[in-house]
Length: 470
Image 1 (cartoon, helix red, strand yellow):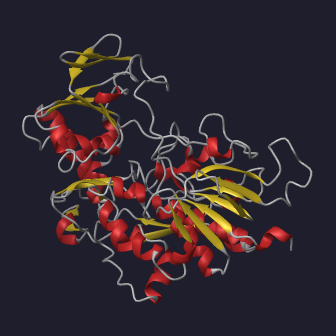
Image 2 (cartoon, rainbow, N blue to C red):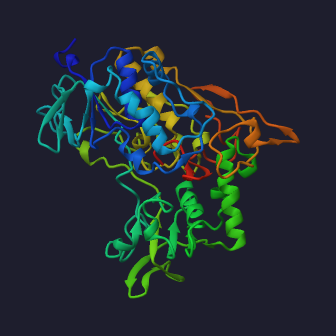
Image 3 (cartoon, rainbow, N blue to C red):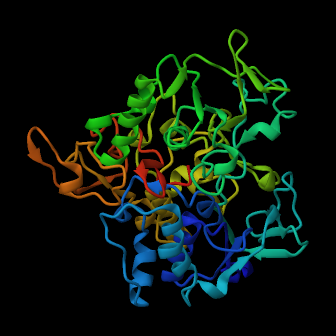
């Protein structure tokens, strides 16, 4: 045992995946500290608290976390219920962070500014493996750790509007007109959207969610711009979707487009945003639309700045580990065709540093919360020296038993009554399918035809979102 083996494992971020890692560390008796920039656990989740997930509770709760919570008298939510982000935080993540096994080790207001090796920059090799990690906080405090699990996510680094990956001409000057993904257009942000001309840019479920909410606002004129020539990918599997609440998103969105409630611009790549006296003019070089508000639902990207002094093997395209990149490439995969993966695919040349959760996927939008929990379990098992468990990667995902998207807009659960059935008979709630390393994870390429992204059908508290911090 080296001297720094007695140091704690540092977990960056107290979101769903970071707290899952903490739960697994606690179960294995490994010392740890969680460094959270916000004042509460699940700070990013609370930002989209008005969104209802399309995946029920059973797929959103980490098994180790559930064991610790149950032992403390926690009453598990009904597995078939669809939680909102606020409920996910209040009914699961806050109680988890407050457990005696976790609470003393979770630090809030602890924003990480940099991670390096004590006394060594990226160039120094001698003694590197024996040197502890040095984590510098914004406050100037230094924290030492034997290993680092980076679950800081991507919420604070959204993609730009510009189609070329850099801001469009005038985008920075027009930032007063631009909203980030998943604004609460029916709640706290309503005044900024009601009666306004609104452009939503993006083809994912975040865009779909916002579009459906906007159609409920009096006087709002809604335009949707996508780079693709067809919205088919956003519509997804519709009635063929194994998660009916997710299928309802595509069905309802298509109906609004076809009715004219939403004006769809296909093949629209934002080239310029120009503020003017009558609003912001958004152009793709050929067409121009003038609007009052722009919702940028173009996805997120990781920020590797804080670990720039570590030796990382990042794929030049995805920004994930090189080993993981071909498994998550959105040009080839949806979240359903990403095979299960764990510590082997997440390992960098910098021994003991692992990025898990949404950040591990780089710029690929195919991440699932359940995948993050399994990443956490695998990485913690490896840190404990239990390599057999670390490499026994499995996922519990929905089968194709439910294929109806006839979910009422205010439904908050998945039941035979809410889903109806296919082929003329009632459909039961999907049973889990457990798949091992190297097999399809179960949503596309064998089980479904649409990505399992983070959004769900509409609800009285807002439209529904997915189960990752997407």
